[in-house]
Length: 276
Image 1 (cartoon, one colour):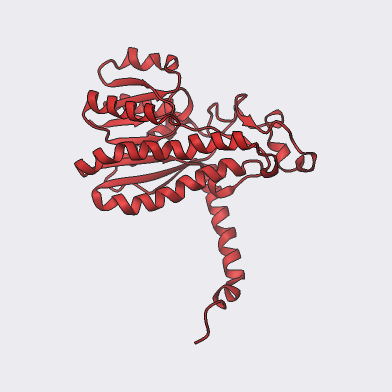
Image 2 (cartoon, rainbow, N blue to C red):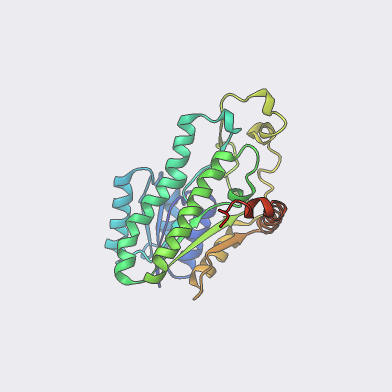
């Protein structure tokens, strides 16, 4: 039995993951900004679930959640940074306050959680950190530049983190889901308040009022949760875990396009060294 601390459990993937972890007999610290939505975990798993209110942008709440987890279960063995939200806007349309909030949650909130659990993991010489990213960090869809930037930042940090903590017995896994049937792209999705007409045929097509995919995404959150737990429990947990056929296909497409660019400009690239 291990103890998982999962952020953002009020709905979607976080909720499905908490259910899966508890169903497998693990302990789970189930968190959300509003704990009213988490009563099912208190009722269903009174001895193995700890419900904690947590806004990852509030350092005092991050510290308190970690301390409560350790007091109840003795340690945090697996941290899942799932809390986050989307934002739709052309780059020029982005509102500074909206973008600040996006980075505060999706990136800096995850950093705070990582720094809170690492001392305990280092002391034990064991642990796992799972950072929920998105295939959008690679595919960089129009209208999602700021969201993609938060996830690309998280992935860059995760790559360095893995090299730092792997010798200490701690694994790091990035999860890149494709489209899953959650509330992520629903009515509460944040977007720019003042669209610019020139972007109507690019970013404009992905505004909420033009959405055609919400509610019909191909991914099943329950299956995604099972995949994540299986990967973390494996003796050789992956650094990168794609989730969904759409994520796999987009990854391959992006890789092929980037490889083509690199090879096309190979001679120019190699011609920049000092001539000896």
